[in-house]
Image 1 (spheres, one colour):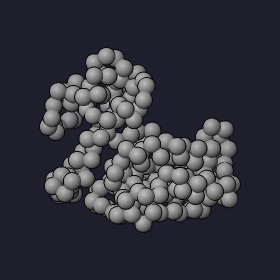
Image 2 (cartoon, rainbow, N blue to C red):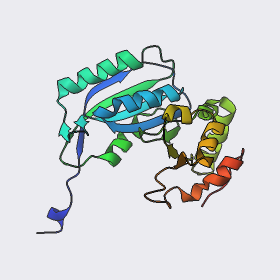
Image 3 (cartoon, rainbow, N blue to C red):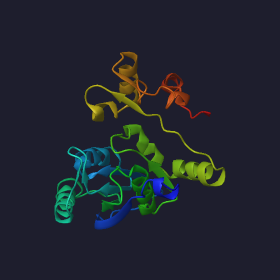
Length: 219
């Protein structure tokens, strides 16, 4: 085999359905990706985020590992919009892509597609399982947006958002910081994926975050 033939095939993503509520755009857009069987998780994420949200969805059922046909994917997305997005003031756009050229879930290609859907200078990339906390709405305030734009676009900084996981009602844990801190103290919540890869979010220093009301530098 030649070196060229041993390279994994790059996935091809072709849009098959693109729906938007024509809501209000803003300065910070949450961008996410998922397989189409995860639309309920996207609905939960949208309930917790009051700002613009865009999502790249693969026409692929992760529960059975099989692709989803065009007509079925379109029907699923339209039903999702009708049930979950009607009345949402902020922009929400979801594009479903057919995946070809790879048997692997194209997570990075989908992340890039999702980022390209955003119309704002600032994006908040989150996996669909992660729910923004109630306090994250401060990120959408004009003064805070100006500070974020200065830090990210002018000073070339990256803002790290702490991520946690826990038992019980995830949307309840995504409420007030005090609720999450109490769950951390009780052992009912922990830094995201700390049981699998502690170094992944180790630099966040969740103990310091729990005690602090100010941002701080991590390396």
